[in-house]
Length: 515
Image (tube, rainbow, N blue to C red):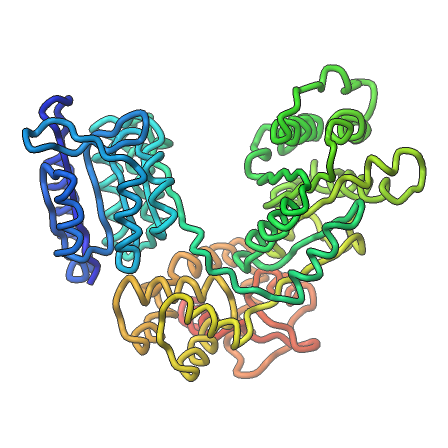
């Protein structure tokens, strides 16, 4: 049973809001849901500061939804004894949620400028949704409708958030970018001690390059952040960039525009002025210009070693117009630190971390690219039994060793799948046996992940055919080597010499049924 607590406040000295309509629409969407019996909605209206804690203590909700006004400084507007505005400081409300973090899984703040409050609460609660600017009544109601419609369809909170934003867009309201979702860094980082130690040793080496690679959602970003934190402790300057921010339809086919954007983005993070007009020579190649910009501007104005961490680099590798040249640029930076000439000293200051999934393979094989055999390559393995037991214990779950082994038989040691299983078990208050029963179905916690993989296979019929041969066999089988490699990169199979087997029982059972 998922319990939802709806709170609202509409002080008499503020503009009227359509809060009752929002509540009515939420109730209706949950009533129409296929899984309506799994939801319980309670509400408290015209709430005062003390009412929130009382309602949470009484109802013990998993989701707390507040609808009302917010101030530009991030305060939620509750009501005082006379019905007038009583602002609530973000830190005070965050401390309340810290006290109930063991039961509340999601907070929705459907109020103007509430992202300030959301950023504070997310220190304690796994998912918090806020609004990064003022939001109109129609958009606020549309978001709530889309969000709870998706929750009622057994979608994850992340996916329900996207449905909420899309509902705004479907109604032709130009506010679909106003809601923001924050996910708590729950502080559960399971160490792979040998890997962290080797990365820490490497990042302090002059001109080092670390390439972190693994199938999607294996913990690459978490490891990258650990290395960056270690570097900061050594008083290095650090810049972390996600290539999501740099690659779009405009630059995907324009190497010059991409490299200019890349240089500017690094400079902005270092708080250095844009000097492209001074250092960019249109008669020279974009690769040469990028090298000069780094050497004479970015690195020249950086006193300490600079760690440049690039996440989601797959987005560049996948672009035929960008991938190979970007690899050459990275290789060139790495090689220049080793030339032993007068310029080498400045390039030794640059330490690179490149993070990419192995599932993106269509246009560039990174293993035969200019980055092959360069730097330290870290391929993240699955969690061991001991590491999974540590994860389970730190999530507060009292599972036996036998139950942990059963879960690993279903999902392997995949960090993302293990976290999803724990989240689902805690949120839905189900038995361990039921968790295993629904895991390989569209009703279970992995629905979105499995559907995403299914769509990828549909886009490559020959690859899907090879994978179906694997999942239908009771023992590892031989398939065409290129398909085996691609399926391994997708994270769908494990290789045993020249033979392939499903990575885990989850994939075997799901794709046997839906393949």
